[in-house]
Image (cartoon, rainbow, N blue to C red; front, side, top):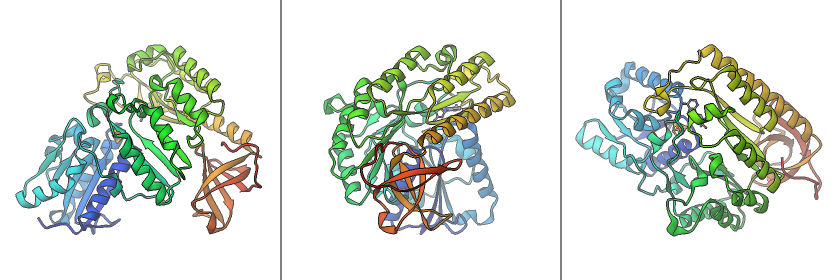
Length: 448
Ligand code: 5AD
Ligand code: SF4
Protein backbone atom coordinates (compact mmCIF):
# COMPACT_ATOMS: atom_id res chain seq x y z
CA UNK A 1 0.00 0.00 0.00
CA UNK A 2 1.41 3.41 -0.91
CA UNK A 3 1.11 6.71 0.86
CA UNK A 4 -1.94 8.43 -0.69
CA UNK A 5 -1.35 11.73 -2.48
CA UNK A 6 -4.96 12.56 -3.34
CA UNK A 7 -8.39 11.91 -1.88
CA UNK A 8 -12.03 11.83 -2.84
CA UNK A 9 -14.73 12.23 -0.19
CA UNK A 10 -18.48 11.75 -0.51
CA UNK A 11 -20.78 12.62 2.35
CA UNK A 12 -24.32 11.28 2.78
CA UNK A 13 -26.95 12.30 5.34
CA UNK A 14 -27.42 15.30 7.55
CA UNK A 15 -25.64 18.61 8.16
CA UNK A 16 -23.67 17.18 11.11
CA UNK A 17 -22.27 14.59 8.75
CA UNK A 18 -21.50 17.26 6.16
CA UNK A 19 -19.53 19.21 8.72
CA UNK A 20 -17.67 16.06 9.83
CA UNK A 21 -16.86 15.44 6.17
CA UNK A 22 -15.54 19.00 5.80
CA UNK A 23 -13.35 18.55 8.89
CA UNK A 24 -11.93 15.28 7.54
CA UNK A 25 -11.25 16.91 4.17
CA UNK A 26 -9.36 19.67 6.01
CA UNK A 27 -7.37 17.10 8.02
CA UNK A 28 -6.34 15.33 4.83
CA UNK A 29 -5.37 18.58 3.13
CA UNK A 30 -3.27 19.50 6.17
CA UNK A 31 -1.55 16.15 5.76
CA UNK A 32 -0.62 17.20 2.25
CA UNK A 33 -3.23 15.28 0.24
CA UNK A 34 -4.91 16.95 -2.71
CA UNK A 35 -8.66 16.81 -3.01
CA UNK A 36 -10.11 15.56 -6.29
CA UNK A 37 -13.67 15.21 -7.55
CA UNK A 38 -12.77 12.09 -9.47
CA UNK A 39 -13.16 8.72 -7.79
CA UNK A 40 -11.03 7.23 -10.53
CA UNK A 41 -8.02 9.46 -9.94
CA UNK A 42 -8.00 9.52 -6.13
CA UNK A 43 -5.58 7.37 -4.09
CA UNK A 44 -7.85 7.52 -1.04
CA UNK A 45 -11.64 7.13 -1.25
CA UNK A 46 -13.62 8.16 1.80
CA UNK A 47 -17.35 7.41 2.11
CA UNK A 48 -18.83 9.40 4.97
CA UNK A 49 -22.05 7.50 5.44
CA UNK A 50 -25.54 7.80 6.91
CA UNK A 51 -27.70 5.09 8.50
CA UNK A 52 -30.90 6.96 9.15
CA UNK A 53 -32.90 5.07 6.53
CA UNK A 54 -32.26 1.86 4.66
CA UNK A 55 -31.93 3.65 1.31
CA UNK A 56 -29.01 5.73 2.58
CA UNK A 57 -27.16 2.55 3.58
CA UNK A 58 -28.00 0.67 0.40
CA UNK A 59 -26.61 3.48 -1.76
CA UNK A 60 -23.22 3.21 -0.06
CA UNK A 61 -23.16 -0.58 -0.04
CA UNK A 62 -23.90 -0.55 -3.78
CA UNK A 63 -21.13 1.94 -4.39
CA UNK A 64 -18.59 -0.01 -2.31
CA UNK A 65 -19.50 -3.29 -4.00
CA UNK A 66 -18.99 -1.64 -7.38
CA UNK A 67 -15.52 -0.43 -6.36
CA UNK A 68 -14.57 -3.97 -5.39
CA UNK A 69 -15.29 -5.07 -8.93
CA UNK A 70 -13.30 -2.27 -10.56
CA UNK A 71 -9.81 -3.21 -11.65
CA UNK A 72 -7.57 -0.53 -10.13
CA UNK A 73 -8.85 -0.97 -6.58
CA UNK A 74 -5.61 -2.49 -5.29
CA UNK A 75 -3.81 0.80 -5.69
CA UNK A 76 -6.45 2.67 -3.69
CA UNK A 77 -7.23 3.01 0.00
CA UNK A 78 -10.96 2.80 0.73
CA UNK A 79 -12.44 3.93 4.04
CA UNK A 80 -15.92 4.14 5.53
CA UNK A 81 -16.63 6.88 8.05
CA UNK A 82 -19.88 8.28 9.46
CA UNK A 83 -22.88 6.56 10.99
CA UNK A 84 -22.64 3.27 9.09
CA UNK A 85 -19.17 2.77 10.54
CA UNK A 86 -20.68 2.72 14.04
CA UNK A 87 -23.80 0.89 13.00
CA UNK A 88 -22.12 -1.95 11.14
CA UNK A 89 -18.59 -1.96 12.60
CA UNK A 90 -16.56 -5.10 11.76
CA UNK A 91 -19.33 -6.63 9.72
CA UNK A 92 -18.46 -4.11 6.99
CA UNK A 93 -15.19 -5.99 6.36
CA UNK A 94 -17.12 -9.23 5.86
CA UNK A 95 -19.48 -7.67 3.36
CA UNK A 96 -16.79 -5.59 1.63
CA UNK A 97 -13.50 -7.51 1.81
CA UNK A 98 -11.58 -4.83 -0.12
CA UNK A 99 -12.43 -2.15 2.48
CA UNK A 100 -9.29 -0.83 4.23
CA UNK A 101 -10.63 1.02 7.24
CA UNK A 102 -13.72 1.87 9.26
CA UNK A 103 -13.64 5.08 11.30
CA UNK A 104 -16.62 5.94 13.51
CA UNK A 105 -18.34 9.26 14.13
CA UNK A 106 -16.57 9.62 17.49
CA UNK A 107 -13.10 8.89 16.10
CA UNK A 108 -12.73 11.51 13.40
CA UNK A 109 -9.72 13.03 15.17
CA UNK A 110 -7.93 9.70 14.55
CA UNK A 111 -8.14 9.82 10.77
CA UNK A 112 -4.40 10.49 10.43
CA UNK A 113 -3.56 7.78 12.95
CA UNK A 114 -5.65 5.19 11.15
CA UNK A 115 -3.94 6.02 7.84
CA UNK A 116 -0.52 5.67 9.48
CA UNK A 117 -1.50 2.32 11.01
CA UNK A 118 -2.79 1.14 7.69
CA UNK A 119 0.46 2.01 5.94
CA UNK A 120 2.73 0.43 8.55
CA UNK A 121 0.69 -2.63 9.48
CA UNK A 122 -0.86 -3.31 6.09
CA UNK A 123 -4.01 -4.76 7.64
CA UNK A 124 -7.61 -3.57 7.89
CA UNK A 125 -8.15 -0.98 10.64
CA UNK A 126 -11.22 -0.07 12.69
CA UNK A 127 -11.93 2.56 15.37
CA UNK A 128 -15.51 3.03 16.54
CA UNK A 129 -15.85 4.48 20.04
CA UNK A 130 -19.30 4.68 21.62
CA UNK A 131 -18.74 8.14 23.01
CA UNK A 132 -17.29 11.37 21.67
CA UNK A 133 -14.47 12.41 23.99
CA UNK A 134 -12.01 14.45 21.97
CA UNK A 135 -12.60 17.97 20.73
CA UNK A 136 -12.21 18.27 16.98
CA UNK A 137 -10.25 21.03 15.31
CA UNK A 138 -13.21 22.49 13.46
CA UNK A 139 -11.04 25.32 12.16
CA UNK A 140 -9.69 22.81 9.63
CA UNK A 141 -13.11 22.39 7.98
CA UNK A 142 -13.05 23.10 4.25
CA UNK A 143 -16.29 25.06 4.09
CA UNK A 144 -18.24 24.95 0.83
CA UNK A 145 -20.00 28.32 1.33
CA UNK A 146 -18.38 31.72 1.68
CA UNK A 147 -20.91 33.45 3.90
CA UNK A 148 -22.76 30.65 5.71
CA UNK A 149 -21.12 28.14 8.03
CA UNK A 150 -22.06 25.20 10.21
CA UNK A 151 -20.80 25.12 13.78
CA UNK A 152 -21.12 21.99 15.90
CA UNK A 153 -22.23 22.65 19.49
CA UNK A 154 -23.31 19.24 20.80
CA UNK A 155 -22.79 15.72 19.53
CA UNK A 156 -24.87 12.61 20.24
CA UNK A 157 -28.40 12.19 21.49
CA UNK A 158 -29.88 11.04 24.81
CA UNK A 159 -33.43 10.69 23.57
CA UNK A 160 -34.72 7.26 22.68
CA UNK A 161 -37.17 7.62 19.83
CA UNK A 162 -37.88 4.02 18.98
CA UNK A 163 -37.33 4.38 15.22
CA UNK A 164 -34.00 6.18 15.40
CA UNK A 165 -30.52 4.79 14.91
CA UNK A 166 -28.70 7.99 15.92
CA UNK A 167 -28.29 7.26 19.66
CA UNK A 168 -26.48 4.07 18.59
CA UNK A 169 -24.32 5.64 15.89
CA UNK A 170 -23.37 8.86 17.66
CA UNK A 171 -23.61 7.97 21.34
CA UNK A 172 -24.53 10.08 24.33
CA UNK A 173 -24.80 13.86 24.31
CA UNK A 174 -21.50 15.71 24.68
CA UNK A 175 -21.59 19.51 24.67
CA UNK A 176 -18.72 21.52 23.32
CA UNK A 177 -17.28 24.14 25.69
CA UNK A 178 -19.00 27.51 25.16
CA UNK A 179 -15.69 29.42 24.87
CA UNK A 180 -14.62 27.18 22.03
CA UNK A 181 -17.91 27.79 20.18
CA UNK A 182 -17.76 31.55 20.70
CA UNK A 183 -14.15 31.61 19.53
CA UNK A 184 -14.93 29.65 16.37
CA UNK A 185 -17.91 31.89 15.57
CA UNK A 186 -15.80 35.00 16.11
CA UNK A 187 -13.12 33.62 13.80
CA UNK A 188 -15.72 32.81 11.14
CA UNK A 189 -17.11 36.35 11.35
CA UNK A 190 -13.58 37.71 11.01
CA UNK A 191 -13.28 35.67 7.80
CA UNK A 192 -16.45 37.26 6.42
CA UNK A 193 -19.11 34.72 7.41
CA UNK A 194 -22.45 36.36 8.17
CA UNK A 195 -24.66 33.41 9.05
CA UNK A 196 -24.01 30.47 11.34
CA UNK A 197 -26.09 27.34 11.76
CA UNK A 198 -25.49 25.68 15.12
CA UNK A 199 -25.59 21.92 14.78
CA UNK A 200 -26.48 19.07 17.07
CA UNK A 201 -28.86 16.12 17.14
CA UNK A 202 -30.73 17.98 19.83
CA UNK A 203 -29.25 21.44 20.25
CA UNK A 204 -31.73 22.29 22.99
CA UNK A 205 -29.98 19.86 25.31
CA UNK A 206 -26.85 21.97 25.01
CA UNK A 207 -25.05 22.40 28.33
CA UNK A 208 -27.16 19.94 30.32
CA UNK A 209 -24.24 17.49 30.47
CA UNK A 210 -21.83 20.25 31.55
CA UNK A 211 -23.55 22.08 34.43
CA UNK A 212 -20.16 23.51 35.49
CA UNK A 213 -20.16 25.83 32.46
CA UNK A 214 -23.45 27.37 33.55
CA UNK A 215 -24.37 27.82 29.91
CA UNK A 216 -27.57 26.31 28.56
CA UNK A 217 -28.70 26.66 24.95
CA UNK A 218 -30.43 30.02 25.38
CA UNK A 219 -27.36 31.33 27.26
CA UNK A 220 -25.17 30.30 24.36
CA UNK A 221 -27.48 32.07 21.91
CA UNK A 222 -27.25 35.23 24.00
CA UNK A 223 -23.44 35.04 23.97
CA UNK A 224 -23.38 34.60 20.20
CA UNK A 225 -25.75 37.52 19.74
CA UNK A 226 -23.02 39.69 21.28
CA UNK A 227 -20.53 38.89 18.54
CA UNK A 228 -20.10 41.98 16.44
CA UNK A 229 -20.76 41.25 12.79
CA UNK A 230 -22.55 37.94 13.32
CA UNK A 231 -25.78 38.83 11.61
CA UNK A 232 -27.68 35.55 11.60
CA UNK A 233 -27.81 32.47 13.79
CA UNK A 234 -29.88 29.35 13.09
CA UNK A 235 -29.90 25.93 14.69
CA UNK A 236 -30.69 22.33 13.78
CA UNK A 237 -32.30 20.28 15.21
CA UNK A 238 -34.56 20.27 18.25
CA UNK A 239 -36.82 18.01 20.25
CA UNK A 240 -40.13 19.73 21.11
CA UNK A 241 -39.84 18.73 24.77
CA UNK A 242 -36.67 20.74 25.17
CA UNK A 243 -37.98 23.94 23.62
CA UNK A 244 -38.28 26.20 26.65
CA UNK A 245 -39.94 29.60 27.21
CA UNK A 246 -36.39 30.99 27.53
CA UNK A 247 -35.70 29.86 23.97
CA UNK A 248 -38.98 31.36 22.76
CA UNK A 249 -37.95 34.64 24.37
CA UNK A 250 -34.56 34.38 22.68
CA UNK A 251 -36.33 34.16 19.29
CA UNK A 252 -38.28 37.27 20.24
CA UNK A 253 -35.36 39.23 21.70
CA UNK A 254 -32.12 38.34 19.92
CA UNK A 255 -31.74 40.19 16.61
CA UNK A 256 -29.30 37.60 15.24
CA UNK A 257 -31.57 34.60 15.85
CA UNK A 258 -33.58 33.65 12.74
CA UNK A 259 -37.29 33.04 13.19
CA UNK A 260 -37.59 29.66 11.44
CA UNK A 261 -37.51 27.00 14.14
CA UNK A 262 -37.48 23.27 13.52
CA UNK A 263 -40.11 21.72 15.76
CA UNK A 264 -40.48 18.11 14.59
CA UNK A 265 -43.89 16.57 15.25
CA UNK A 266 -43.11 13.17 13.64
CA UNK A 267 -46.71 11.92 13.92
CA UNK A 268 -50.15 13.31 14.65
CA UNK A 269 -51.68 10.57 16.76
CA UNK A 270 -51.02 10.15 20.48
CA UNK A 271 -51.02 6.39 20.10
CA UNK A 272 -48.27 6.49 17.46
CA UNK A 273 -46.31 9.14 19.36
CA UNK A 274 -46.36 6.87 22.41
CA UNK A 275 -45.03 3.97 20.37
CA UNK A 276 -42.37 6.28 18.95
CA UNK A 277 -41.45 7.26 22.54
CA UNK A 278 -41.61 10.92 21.65
CA UNK A 279 -42.60 11.74 25.24
CA UNK A 280 -45.22 14.38 24.36
CA UNK A 281 -48.87 14.25 23.43
CA UNK A 282 -50.37 16.22 20.58
CA UNK A 283 -52.16 18.35 23.18
CA UNK A 284 -48.83 19.30 24.76
CA UNK A 285 -47.24 19.87 21.36
CA UNK A 286 -50.01 22.23 20.24
CA UNK A 287 -49.90 24.06 23.55
CA UNK A 288 -46.22 24.70 23.05
CA UNK A 289 -46.79 26.03 19.54
CA UNK A 290 -49.50 28.32 20.89
CA UNK A 291 -47.15 29.58 23.60
CA UNK A 292 -44.32 30.04 21.07
CA UNK A 293 -46.53 32.03 18.71
CA UNK A 294 -47.73 34.17 21.60
CA UNK A 295 -44.24 34.96 22.88
CA UNK A 296 -42.64 35.35 19.44
CA UNK A 297 -45.37 36.16 16.89
CA UNK A 298 -42.85 36.18 14.03
CA UNK A 299 -41.80 32.57 14.58
CA UNK A 300 -42.19 30.19 11.64
CA UNK A 301 -42.12 26.46 12.23
CA UNK A 302 -40.53 23.53 10.46
CA UNK A 303 -41.17 19.85 11.02
CA UNK A 304 -40.16 16.26 10.30
CA UNK A 305 -42.90 13.68 9.76
CA UNK A 306 -42.66 9.90 9.49
CA UNK A 307 -45.50 8.09 7.73
CA UNK A 308 -46.14 4.35 7.89
CA UNK A 309 -44.78 3.73 11.38
CA UNK A 310 -45.77 0.20 12.52
CA UNK A 311 -49.54 -0.08 13.17
CA UNK A 312 -50.29 3.44 11.79
CA UNK A 313 -53.96 3.26 10.76
CA UNK A 314 -55.75 5.43 8.21
CA UNK A 315 -57.26 7.34 11.15
CA UNK A 316 -53.81 7.92 12.70
CA UNK A 317 -52.57 9.21 9.36
CA UNK A 318 -55.60 11.50 8.92
CA UNK A 319 -54.72 13.05 12.29
CA UNK A 320 -51.23 13.86 10.98
CA UNK A 321 -52.77 15.31 7.82
CA UNK A 322 -55.25 17.40 9.76
CA UNK A 323 -52.57 18.76 12.09
CA UNK A 324 -50.29 19.73 9.23
CA UNK A 325 -53.22 21.60 7.70
CA UNK A 326 -53.88 23.33 11.00
CA UNK A 327 -50.31 24.21 11.97
CA UNK A 328 -49.21 25.34 8.48
CA UNK A 329 -45.49 24.65 8.74
CA UNK A 330 -43.18 26.78 6.68
CA UNK A 331 -40.93 23.80 6.00
CA UNK A 332 -41.62 20.06 6.26
CA UNK A 333 -39.42 17.01 5.71
CA UNK A 334 -41.57 13.95 5.20
CA UNK A 335 -40.24 10.39 5.34
CA UNK A 336 -41.56 6.86 4.94
CA UNK A 337 -40.73 4.72 7.96
CA UNK A 338 -37.67 2.54 7.42
CA UNK A 339 -36.98 -0.12 10.07
CA UNK A 340 -33.45 0.12 11.47
CA UNK A 341 -31.94 -3.02 12.90
CA UNK A 342 -31.16 -2.67 16.61
CA UNK A 343 -33.73 0.08 17.24
CA UNK A 344 -36.62 -0.62 19.65
CA UNK A 345 -39.27 -0.16 16.91
CA UNK A 346 -38.14 -3.35 15.20
CA UNK A 347 -39.98 -5.24 17.94
CA UNK A 348 -43.09 -4.40 15.91
CA UNK A 349 -43.67 -5.77 12.45
CA UNK A 350 -43.10 -3.25 9.63
CA UNK A 351 -46.73 -3.85 8.72
CA UNK A 352 -47.66 -0.88 6.54
CA UNK A 353 -47.30 -1.88 2.88
CA UNK A 354 -44.83 0.19 0.87
CA UNK A 355 -47.61 1.43 -1.47
CA UNK A 356 -49.57 2.75 1.51
CA UNK A 357 -46.49 4.49 2.90
CA UNK A 358 -45.82 6.07 -0.48
CA UNK A 359 -49.43 7.17 -0.89
CA UNK A 360 -49.42 8.79 2.56
CA UNK A 361 -46.07 10.42 1.85
CA UNK A 362 -47.32 11.89 -1.42
CA UNK A 363 -50.50 13.19 0.15
CA UNK A 364 -48.48 15.07 2.76
CA UNK A 365 -46.04 16.39 0.17
CA UNK A 366 -48.97 17.74 -1.87
CA UNK A 367 -50.52 19.29 1.22
CA UNK A 368 -47.25 20.94 2.20
CA UNK A 369 -46.82 22.29 -1.32
CA UNK A 370 -50.26 23.92 -1.16
CA UNK A 371 -49.44 25.40 2.26
CA UNK A 372 -46.16 26.79 0.91
CA UNK A 373 -47.89 28.22 -2.14
CA UNK A 374 -50.34 30.04 0.10
CA UNK A 375 -47.45 31.28 2.22
CA UNK A 376 -45.56 32.52 -0.85
CA UNK A 377 -48.67 34.32 -2.13
CA UNK A 378 -49.13 36.02 1.21
CA UNK A 379 -45.53 37.24 1.11
CA UNK A 380 -45.78 38.95 -2.28
CA UNK A 381 -45.17 42.68 -2.03
CA UNK A 382 -43.26 42.30 1.24
CA UNK A 383 -39.79 43.64 1.77
CA UNK A 384 -37.50 41.06 3.32
CA UNK A 385 -33.86 40.75 4.25
CA UNK A 386 -31.65 38.42 2.21
CA UNK A 387 -28.09 37.27 2.62
CA UNK A 388 -26.64 37.63 -0.88
CA UNK A 389 -24.80 34.37 -1.50
CA UNK A 390 -23.85 34.06 -5.17
CA UNK A 391 -24.84 34.70 -8.75
CA UNK A 392 -27.70 32.64 -10.11
CA UNK A 393 -26.41 29.76 -12.22
CA UNK A 394 -29.35 30.06 -14.61
CA UNK A 395 -29.29 33.81 -15.15
CA UNK A 396 -26.03 35.63 -14.51
CA UNK A 397 -27.86 38.99 -14.25
CA UNK A 398 -29.46 37.79 -11.03
CA UNK A 399 -28.06 37.38 -7.55
CA UNK A 400 -29.23 34.61 -5.22
CA UNK A 401 -30.17 35.51 -1.69
CA UNK A 402 -31.55 33.64 1.30
CA UNK A 403 -34.19 35.08 3.63
CA UNK A 404 -34.14 34.65 7.40
CA UNK A 405 -36.78 31.95 7.03
CA UNK A 406 -34.92 29.98 4.37
CA UNK A 407 -36.59 31.17 1.19
CA UNK A 408 -34.51 31.54 -1.97
CA UNK A 409 -34.76 34.89 -3.71
CA UNK A 410 -33.35 36.00 -7.07
CA UNK A 411 -32.93 39.69 -7.86
CA UNK A 412 -30.86 41.84 -10.22
CA UNK A 413 -27.78 43.35 -8.64
CA UNK A 414 -24.04 43.99 -8.87
CA UNK A 415 -21.20 41.84 -7.48
CA UNK A 416 -20.51 44.36 -4.72
CA UNK A 417 -23.61 43.07 -2.94
CA UNK A 418 -22.22 39.54 -2.53
CA UNK A 419 -21.78 38.60 1.11
CA UNK A 420 -23.97 41.43 2.36
CA UNK A 421 -27.48 41.61 3.77
CA UNK A 422 -29.88 43.45 1.49
CA UNK A 423 -33.50 44.47 1.59
CA UNK A 424 -35.50 43.24 -1.38
CA UNK A 425 -39.14 43.51 -2.39
CA UNK A 426 -40.75 40.23 -3.47
CA UNK A 427 -42.77 40.54 -6.67
CA UNK A 428 -43.32 37.01 -7.98
CA UNK A 429 -42.39 33.37 -7.42
CA UNK A 430 -42.02 29.99 -9.02
CA UNK A 431 -42.23 26.61 -7.30
CA UNK A 432 -39.23 27.17 -5.05
CA UNK A 433 -37.88 30.65 -5.72
CA UNK A 434 -38.99 34.23 -5.23
CA UNK A 435 -38.13 37.01 -7.65
CA UNK A 436 -37.49 40.45 -6.23
CA UNK A 437 -35.98 43.85 -6.72
CA UNK A 438 -33.79 45.84 -4.38
CA UNK A 439 -35.91 47.85 -1.95
CA UNK A 440 -35.58 51.35 -0.59
CA UNK A 441 -34.45 51.75 2.97
CA UNK A 442 -36.84 51.60 5.92
CA UNK A 443 -39.01 48.69 4.82
CA UNK A 444 -42.07 47.69 6.81
CA UNK A 445 -41.17 44.10 7.44
CA UNK A 446 -37.93 42.17 7.08
CA UNK A 447 -38.66 38.65 8.16
CA UNK A 448 -39.55 36.20 5.47
N1 5AD B 1 -37.41 5.91 9.23
C1 5AD B 1 -37.85 7.03 8.62
N2 5AD B 1 -37.50 8.27 9.00
C2 5AD B 1 -36.65 8.38 10.04
N3 5AD B 1 -36.14 9.45 10.65
C3 5AD B 1 -35.33 9.04 11.64
N4 5AD B 1 -35.32 7.69 11.70
C4 5AD B 1 -36.15 7.25 10.72
C5 5AD B 1 -36.55 5.97 10.27
N5 5AD B 1 -36.13 4.86 10.87
C6 5AD B 1 -36.49 10.84 10.28
C7 5AD B 1 -37.09 11.59 11.47
C8 5AD B 1 -35.97 12.50 11.88
C9 5AD B 1 -35.30 12.77 10.54
C10 5AD B 1 -33.90 13.28 10.64
O1 5AD B 1 -35.31 11.52 9.90
O2 5AD B 1 -38.19 12.33 11.01
O3 5AD B 1 -36.41 13.68 12.51
FE1 SF4 C 1 -27.68 10.05 9.01
FE2 SF4 C 1 -28.61 10.53 11.45
FE3 SF4 C 1 -26.08 9.87 11.14
FE4 SF4 C 1 -26.95 12.26 10.32
S1 SF4 C 1 -26.85 11.50 12.45
S2 SF4 C 1 -25.63 10.89 9.19
S3 SF4 C 1 -29.02 11.72 9.59
S4 SF4 C 1 -27.87 8.60 10.74
